[in-house]
Image 1 (cartoon, helix red, strand yellow):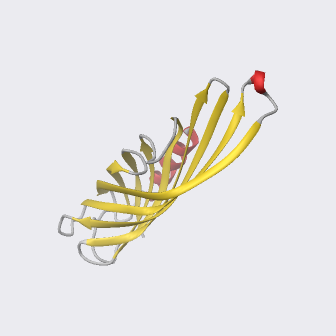
Image 2: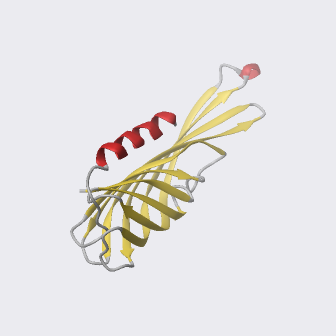
Image 3: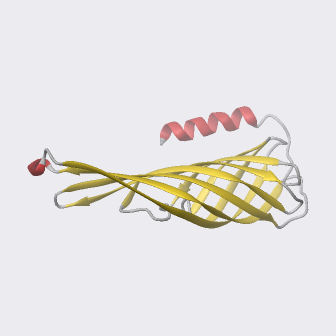
Length: 177
């Protein structure tokens, strides 16, 4: 977790040398973020918070489309042992941008539809050692969000989102491509 924040901080320092612009048609946004709150369809308690990388393509003055990839883990303890789960989310996103083109601020809302690849494993307690099992289950993933991006420079900014999907709150850095 500490490494992730260090990497995001270093990327932010190097990218923040320019000046800013908000959303407009033809602008492509790369978001790298971390979520707080469980992934939709998650089990047990969260061990590793949802991290994600998303790319949005501005196809209209008010609409962008793109994709997102996310990862998280959780675990669930029982009397006989512990289940561990990992989640890889691959999805498509669409966003509606509420404001007219701005130099700094972009307010938006959107939906996500994709696939949640779930893997699980069982670790038995000492009295039951020798038993281990691996299983997996995957399903449709959906979510919705409302968010804001703020540009510190023409190529670098920050974003924050609230919603249902890859965590309840997502924050991170934004790069204009």
